[in-house]
Length: 149
Length: 149
DNA sequence: TGCATATAGATCGTGTGCAATTGAATTGTG
DNA sequence: CACAATTCAATTGCACACGATCTATATGCA
Image 1 (tube, each protein chain N blue to C red):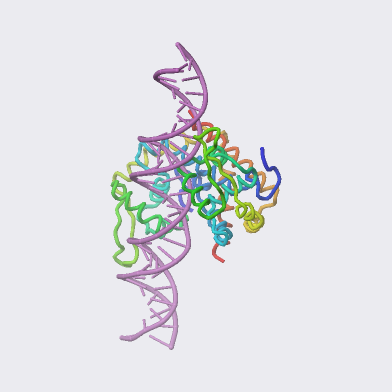
Image 2 (cartoon, each protein chain N blue to C red):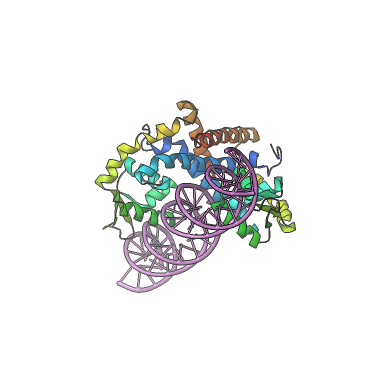
């Protein structure tokens, strides 16, 4: 092991642990998402819509911490794949509302098994996973809040 | 809070917590890396080289869990910025060895303060941060190992 | 009402990530 | 030695991320 102690030591950096773990997770999910023709970011957008349908781009972005520069092309691809519909809000023409199509809703059943399948290799109990998730989410919250200033 | 319980609930997903926290971290680092003209991935490559200089692309990739498709253009940009030199290994012409330039080495001093600056907003003790880092790194290791099969 | 301001989404440019392919160089095996 | 298999880096194509900018629409306030 190199560089055990310094502030710049890679192994000490929480940021790098999250960065590399996030990519490792993405690769693990890919195996299950490829057959559905979805990428991980597309999958999380669908997660949001499965929880609550008919949201604006902004509402999806707030939930996922993504902006329109990322979401607009992604949502167009989901639309091209037939999973969602995009339509301007009649009341407020600035907004675009995103709705699931029938096939988009149907995809949910096929996605149900994915978290468990990926979870199999984690070697964590459900409680441990929950605790870690909460801890990391709390961290993200603090980073997100501090970014406003 | 929506969708408290299901396996597909966004808030329950460790993967999403890591994914969004990783991006939040990236945005926090950007504030400090922009003045240095570096992106976060470029910064972690330099972290590796500051620990040990004169590595092949493959060795850097193994350390960072990145492949040549990502690293080759990134390293070319670091070379264009004058931070590293790229040269074929005389003994094994397949390999490209990456060495820091004087300015690349000098950048280290300016980077020293960054982890502490970002760490300020985390609200974690050093021990807590270390524990969390180890836990997430362990997870990444298991995901990485399972990807081989 | 009228006009400055704010908001939502789209667009553009740059820089990752990564699978798949290619091509050069090396290694293993008979 | 020959030659197939392997290894390494580069390349290509696609899909994010995100800052910056643009346009259209809506809101606030005199």
